[in-house]
Image (tube, rainbow, N blue to C red; front, side, top):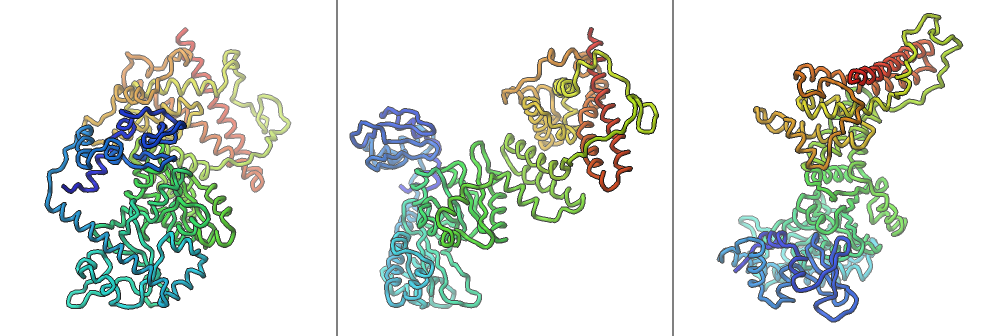
Length: 626
């Protein structure tokens, strides 16, 4: 019976490895892993680890290593199919019935593996022959050591259209075509795919050669610098990462995976002691490759060249990753100095320089902000609006609701600080005039506050009003969707208030995209359920000081309650707008003293009026309850 790799991967994903091993071996929790004394050899100090996230066990004493199936065959002594059937029963999966076509495909895979192994041996022999002199000179020029040549299996494909078929005469030509070693053109004799190239084997997780990458050595017009094998029954370009079989082992020591752009970068990093490096097959990182890496480490480091092509590759990888983000799993981004790749940097400045660059990796949100901020000129309001739209578009692609909401808020906060930066304010010099008069001798309209209002601060009242607003929004959730843009700019300083507001905005947004029928209307019960699901609770009504708004009472008409909610939002969003305008007026003081000073005074009066209205609202509402 032939089982597909996809079916076996699904079986492994449904099995909790520690649960399988824990039936016969006592495991102790150790961080993200489990530990035990190794069941494969006698020991007193535990060196046997089980990692559920990565799906394997490993003993650092005797080297025992494997997955759930390997455990059942090696430790329990079951035949392979019996082990699969037992695990499938535990996972609730049906073992596929025998399929003759799959059996033939499995036989073909084994045969193609043999052909690829034969080709690899031939390429290695060619490198050591007189024909490989140019390839050896190139490796010497690049500083590749003899140990690295052996470790990574460098070889050479001679400049001959018909060399490989006679060398692999034990394999029929149709099989060599299927393996991607020959190119078959209708009406012509198949000819060698790789000619005059330095060859590197591409291996699977078990270390078997499944494809090749070849670098051209001579200047040939229109010839690609690197040429990879095509997809074959044993090689899927989008599901394979170069050097993954070595990097997986190294990552268990460093808890790091570094993704670089090319094969030579991987080899240069390995020579510098960074063995946990992988590379895609000359294309942008795919969703399947990201999932492969995330099974090894939660936050891999993507390292890109400092040129424009490297930056484009970084953005492609980020765009692919955003929809897949999940709690605890992300990416770090490293950008090398302009015009350099890892090999260049290591050869110029040494391994320490590379480690220093990796240590300064950006978070994913940092990289998105930097890329988009620098992507286009930002001279006009339209340019800045375009930046905001691009940032929102990135956040909207994230599928996980909590992460999407957090990215949206973080990116918009950065946009706000960039588009409306706080200006350094000049010292306020109001002039020498009497209290209660403006600079022209007229009476101001601001009256001294009462004793009751002196005991209240604007910040305290604002916090209480936000508490009241949150309670009112839960009771009248239609206002959340209608006022979402202004509510998103509220930015409460209290963390609990911010979390509540984020949850409400996200609930309204999700419901808005859920459909246009009546069932998509957000109800109070929906908001309450979402808050409860996140462990959030509304403020206690006692904390809002007895404020008696219509939207806080159960008997108020919906229209009246909605009007008061909108008025409260008006009041709360006014202060940031006043302060921004005041800062801009202050910044213009040196160029236009008279105009800027007049604007300062107008805005200061408006700010004082705002604070008076805010405190009088609190006082009047409180007195209404007395």
